[in-house]
Length: 491
Figure 1 (tube, one colour):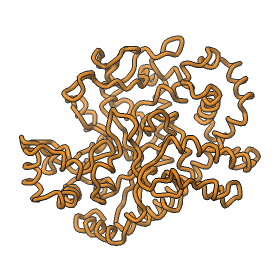
Figure 2: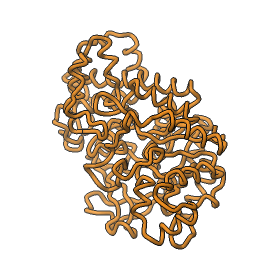
Figure 3: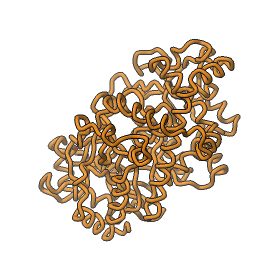
Figure 4: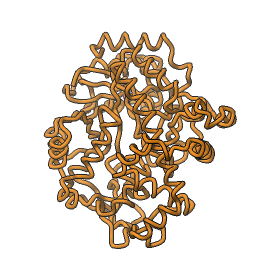
């Protein structure tokens, strides 16, 4: 990797007129800002359609895109929608996304545009549907059926469609044809608009870092359309689910509930589904960060139906065999391994063997022992350093909430006296380190406190909502960022 720097900002956090960030002119303006600021990378969160809890890490599909991000202005220009019906001043809070409001209004607008479009006769649309049939057919039907059953998860559907019996698939596709086409319409415009934005960023010398969770959601088109890929019983109910064992922070462990891959089956197919998944990712992104990389070495399983993750067991993952196959099929693609948390020797060896850069989080570095693998002087070049990620406090919030002893260590290391200095100093520590790549959350460049935090793991209701104010992107900030990128050799 070249020495470079970038910014972490979710698509949903981009300013816009319509309640949530998307592929509108404001996204292009953000790319222009990154260029002016001397940045080479824009890291985003997963792009998939969100479900319960609004988490981009629990998506209805690992292949599909979030229709909330579609720029409505294109439909207004085509005459399919009126601007007055797209703007809702009551819910367009410039600081937070109101997901419930958007869920109840956005699909109505998209459906109106769909009906006005006559898209089903369009040659480009027909070609898109055919080209992406391997995932789009299952996703569009899954969403159409789900809507017809008031959003119930597929494991609660009637047996014929739950188990994907041929006659049921034919029946529902005929019965719900308009809804099926509507979901294809969403994906067509999502892809058109995202590819255009990505091309624009690439033309400015900026690469996109995408983010994918290792697991898919149980209630997803991936699991319903491909039950053979997972450890399910004859009725397509999971036998075991994913999670993490108890630790010093969680006495009951973490019960994620995702289905577990049948790795023996995947190996027999030459990891065909994973090859398709990563190939699709590299149409969307230039670099892919894979969440919970440890799970490829070994993973924790909990018997389905258990109330918590106290009782579970570790099982071996596919190991290097999967990545050897991916390299053979796709070539040497850019991957970032999320290798945070407790790591066994075998996980460390796997990351080293793949040669993928791991992650360093600077806010993890400071404690009263004054010893940490996250301190910059311990890094080697092949890593990606962050002040923090979407799951962490902002730097300012972290500093204010530190224990007195830990803060004293940080102040000595950073050479600071107050909270006013901490964001700039922490960013400089990242940028000046030997790490090939440094990515800074936009909240830390803006020196925001925890009111701008993106996610608090294992909580619901307040996450994924932060939006950046449009006036935040000043010429002075771009000049400051560019100066630091230049000083620390990241231009």
